Length: 532
Ligand SMILES: [Zn+2]
Figure (cartoon, rainbow, N blue to C red):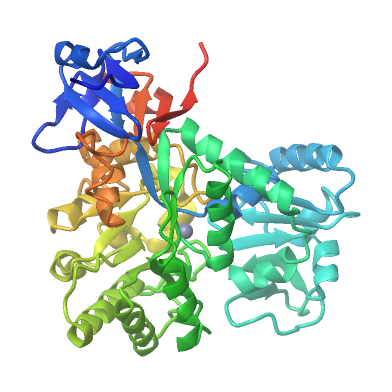
């Protein structure tokens, strides 16, 4: 007796991400698993009285998307702040901040997020918009923020040069007064920490709002790229309450001041292996970002040869801490934007392998905005994964003059080297780094498909739609050691699926952004469905 399915999705263009059976028409689901992948006719035997049949209407069905680099909880908290991503001029900023301030009259603070570089640079510019309430706005990449005079006074850093911590610069003018620009975590936190945090209820509400938005974009799993036990427990509580419609993998953030015994927390987190929420990894930052001259580079900055950058961890320090993590069986992920950071991390991984021996560790490097050609084959040699975010790359030279002028033409050949790394044998996985970039996979795929060379001499780094989807599904599942459970549409696999509004493979690459998820399923439950 064949057990009837709970769902049959038929008439779809199924892209399975599975090599031996890449395409199909229909999928049947029972409970939380896929029980059939094949043609429309054969799927019929699974139809029972209670089976819900979803007509795919010739549109693409893929495995649920896995975003391998997001900041979920902090991003969710940002959802309670003014959205500045679309701001292009100071006038736009004025309009949005004033209306946000007006809608949130009872809050003291006016906080915004996601602004581009080059729109404001001083506290006076913000004072012109709002002077009587403290104002704090964060750059899209999370590495710089700007505050008005009132906020700087409240933080006690306008005049006073108090100790804010090693990882941060309060930019000062000739008189020693803070200009309003705050670079990197400790400087930003000197002000940000004063903004009242949402209470537990509001926190849960914002998290659920974020999860809903991820589902709406076709995302069913994320790798949360920083975290600690407390954050893991917020997700775990949501899973316990039956509200967590997203699988979350949470590494422990190893700060540069962390002591060896602090890694015990990562070991405790690794013991948490729930259906949706789990630990098992450690995250390091080797450097900052090119935009704020904090990327650790091999050659000087093109537009400021005097800018001196030290890595956040020395090679010895990183190797020591990473070796301990590796011994504990943790996966390691390291933020590296500069080519120097990439090289030093690979050196550390190599030294660690010599000490601990080779195991199936799947350690990873995040971002890789520039990589020297001699380091590219080392990803394959050392078994290191390239976790990349296509939409961080300027779509064209004109799209982001700040990034392209910091790096300079010489380095553009090795910039965001997706194709070069793939050719060198590296496994690539994709993500957004939300809130740095929007998490909509179609936006990230758009850049992956349509990026224009910054100089005619550059190699073409674009990827195909198949490669991008595989990096977002099958290979992303591999990155988190779940390749036998999800990331492919295959019998026995978890029913994490997404049906799109179009046959993606029939679309012109330049139109891909107009496609969107119309139905997202996780664990065999419909978690998002477009209402028609
Ligand atoms: Zn990140």
